[in-house]
Image (cartoon, rainbow, N blue to C red):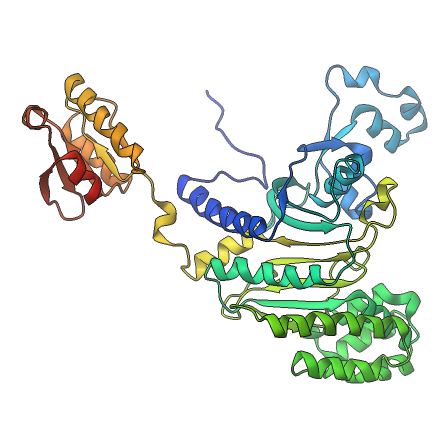
Length: 455
């Protein structure tokens, strides 16, 4: 008995309609990347294990897919590893490569490896799949695409301004209006931790603060107390719990909280610069919002932190994010190369567009006209016309077999092809084509020029 086919958990097949919709998003993002001056690169789907391991923390390392060495890898495995029961040695002796976990670390490796060929500042974009040995669940997969854009070799805040404009350009082009681009700054979070005497508890403080909109003020305070943050420090945070209003209003409130922190003040200056520039330049459909609870990738980011929220009418997590990092390439020995980057969440953007019915009908446009096959002579005559139609940008094809008319018509209906062309002896003599509109059943005889014009 034949084995029932299946695919690994956390992976997906995509039908033609889904691929067309995904390509619509890819092409929109790619077009915006290139309009803003970003250049495409690609890196291998797998890297040397030492390139990836140790770059994502213990949790990330556990989620990296290792690739077994080819050949009889077990007999070549390090005997010492067996004897010492050293799992790390054993892993390295049977697996020297791994599937990439994200696009950022391979990008850092690329910059360092090709630093003498790159013109800095270097603006790159990458749209490629990544793999994570995560537990599959709704919206979380083991294989998925990332769409990243980064600038390395510049610490100018104009880059942050451009990335906000880039987000706005992409979501405006997708007709996804009402998107909120949230922004914060690592320096502000560090400054707040410093002011409340919890500089050594920065992660604990921000993890708790990040839950403010989910569990409320009192529960956040309880969590902070459990992490050893003093009552005096928590009381100094009180203005933070009620921080609302416009970007400018929140900035003024932060100034009073962070007046004694040099680092926090620097963060305020950076955010003010970005906000003033965006206010002057304007955004098409997105809005910029300061969110002091935003702390994504805190161990990684050193300046601005971005997160993009879908329109309020859709219940969805972030659909994009990123930030400023001061030493991305330092992990590979190239120090002091500042960078900033953003990412688009393809799968979540797809779900949002689907829910809001924002995919244009033309996205799934496939074959526009099917020529019915009545036999070899008619097929050859039809293929000459099809060649002309294709040369004029019209998607056309011939049904491959001279099957019964009903079967060919059903094929056109099932594929939602809007037109069929019938070519018989009479059409061949008069060099015309009988065009049938499938949704109405109307038929008309046309010349090749009229056929092109009509379709």
